[in-house]
Amino acid sequence: MPPIQVRLERDGAASCRTSDGAAFAAASPSALWQRLADGPAGAIHLLPEGTEPTGGSGSAAEAMMAAGCGAAVGPVLRAGGVEAPAPWRTDAVRSARMAGGGLIVSAGLAGDLAARLVRRRWDRFWPSDLAALVAELCEPLRWPKAVARRLQGDPDEDLRGDLMPPWRAGLAPHDGVAPTLLVYGACDASSMLYFDAFARTAGVNLLFLRPSHPAADLGWLCAASAVVLVRGLAQALQTGVADLMRAVGVPVFWFVDDDFFALAREYPSFAPYKAERMADLAERIAGIIVPTAALRETLAGTIGFPSGRIAVLGPRPARCWPRPTRPAQGVGLIGGTFRGEGLRRLVVPALAASASPPRIVACDNLRPFLGGIQAEWEPYEPDFLTFLHRWQRRAPAVIAHPPGRTANLPAKSDATILVAHAIGAVPVVADEPGFSGWGEEQGVVRVAGRDWAEALRHAQRPDVAGEMRARLDAVLAAEARFSDDALTLLAAVTHPAPVADDLFHERLNAALGSPLLAPRVAEPRVRRSLAKRLRDSAVKRLGWLQ
Image (cartoon, rainbow, N blue to C red):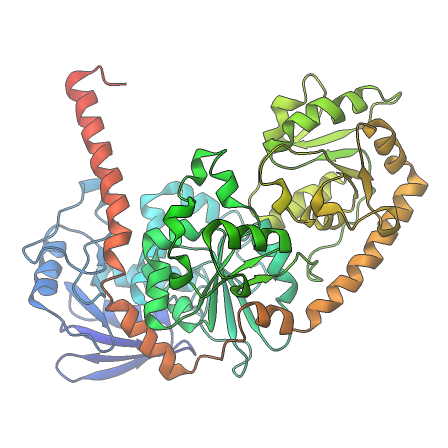
């Protein structure tokens, strides 16, 4: 079959043109795959609109099919052939890297893709490009854990269209005349506590996308009026996403709710966040969004980022979050291990001194700090809405948040108060800068010094707990009303314009043809793969390397 150029439309259709001039249209992904499956057997070569096949890509198609491989995506490194997969991975997606981007797929796999799309009811969703569709649907063939993770949910569930796993999302905006803001990061507390309140706000299309392979995310990135990178700036710089978006004209903003440069001195995982490594950051991204004025001043001083391009956007509750319904009882313990010493020194003795020891629910990352105290343990859960669901079932009456020990403390916000409120608990917090504006008049118990025993007893009294929850509910209900207007959010991203279809396709084709896309994505994976092969070989041959 001759190579086919494909243009994906936002309404879910695809316009296709073969290199010999024939044209056809497909109304849905499954219709396209089925048409390809019904054609001649062999290799099917799909290209983004505006690109042409090369001799190298043709050789790659022949090599992939000769090796029995089901599919290949990306640009080609070698025109002479592609490394064949191991026999047990013959259906796996291969990162063969074709010149100009695109996809090579066998006719048999095309038919399988059509059947899966219909069976799993994904047919009304287009990924960013055809390579993304194959990558997402074939990934479970390589990684059984991905299958288990994706099948945990009810296939008939009413999905939130704004929380976009790459394999289920569409590109069409809710409001065609409003700008589209893409929150690019895991749907964790950092995304949900600061942006989810705007998910139903008129005047902006707010979408959440968990990062996948940059090529698989290109469609949503290019369709966005602005992209907000949630916390993971180093990864976006390493993979080239940030530079690629700048090159094609998409403004990129970094949202960060901790002082990563202070944390880099305490935790090896934050090592990329050194001031000298971010010296040119102001040239690479459009701005930074932080939750507190203190963090704005810190970042401006640490990395020299212009303070006028650092916006402050505090946490706020979302009306679409589920409400707690169960009777509350006991004490809940959440937070990072940097609060472990305060937990051991202040909260544990206070709980042990209680005449009637309360029921305790705790995140299991805090287990080392609780000594012999009996507790109901909740596993760490990064997905915020799942976390919320689990803790609402546990229904603690109080959330205790002891003082922390970290240089990052002055940058912390009051987001824990919103978490406690969403769980249905009274927040009992340390007297820290982030909680300075809160007190019992607003429904929060702030503890100065060591008197945690009395504070916890006070907050657990049924009459006090009920009154405190009512006060906090009233304060946060007023805060939620501020999210009815998109101006606050749009001001933080400098009021971007909506993206017209022509601009979307111009960006997408420019990105697919950009040299920024492939090299930075491949290098870390190649290094890890090579290191693993060398190590495995040494272990097998020598039997002593540890």
